[in-house]
Image (cartoon, rainbow, N blue to C red; front, side, top):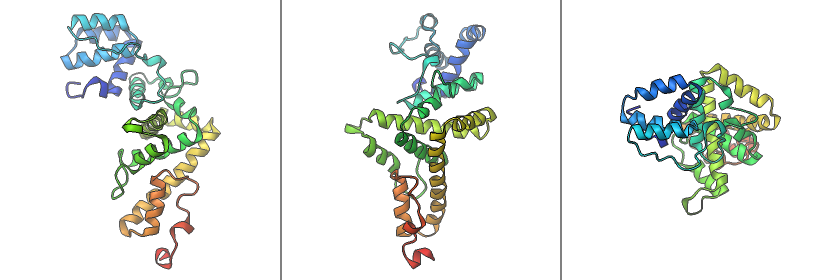
Amino acid sequence: MDQAPSSAENGTITGFFAALFDGSPEMRRKLLDGVPSDRAADLYLAALHKAGLTDEARRFASSRKLEDAASPGAMPLKTLTPLFVPLDNDLLLGAYMATGDLSYIDHILGDHILGNLRTSPDGIAADAICIGLVMGKFAGAVAPGRPENIMIVAACRKYGCPKSQASKDMMRVMTVASAVWAIRSLAKNDVAIKQELDRFFQNDSRLAAIFGREQNAFTNYLASVTLWSVEKGKSLDAAMTDYERLGAADTSFKPDSILQSPEDKN
């Protein structure tokens, strides 16, 4: 914790301790009585607020001579629904890691992480899944050799980023995209999350169809990335650019559009 950035940038750590503090008063007392450093104290204070333990946070801040700087009306973890803030996904993932409680991942009544995807319109869901798949493969960036930030610029143009201030639709796309990235990454090593993700799509035929189309287009994009590293043909570049600019998944990478000349076909 001493090496971690500020609590505002540490959603996973904050969510982890918020869930511990909320679920176990005994653990909360033990941790708050044995704070190892000022840095840890800052993180604990943020976690107390996210747990909805306002009075405890006030007493802790006073005992440690900390400025109790939580914003008024901060949303407690239990009622948090990520819509327009990607960091909210991290808070809920941290809570899951502390407790193993899958309701932090998807809760029909509370609409936690996957609930944001469930309630997204088709276009936002498709674009968010597309961006999330690319982020997960290339660690938040585009494929090597491709124009930097091309997907983010395309999303801004599509959903609006006036005066460099992203619109709510743009922020929702990025929030869902970060959730897709995080959940799919965790599912590779966490059986419970893998099963929850499978159940989610089994119970939602609309999103399952959208995800299937985006997954297929993404697979074609990865094949194109490999081809691009060998031969940078114009037709292939145009197809990849269309995908990177959030073109429709069901029209991306059609063979007839890529292989336009005998040279391309060879």
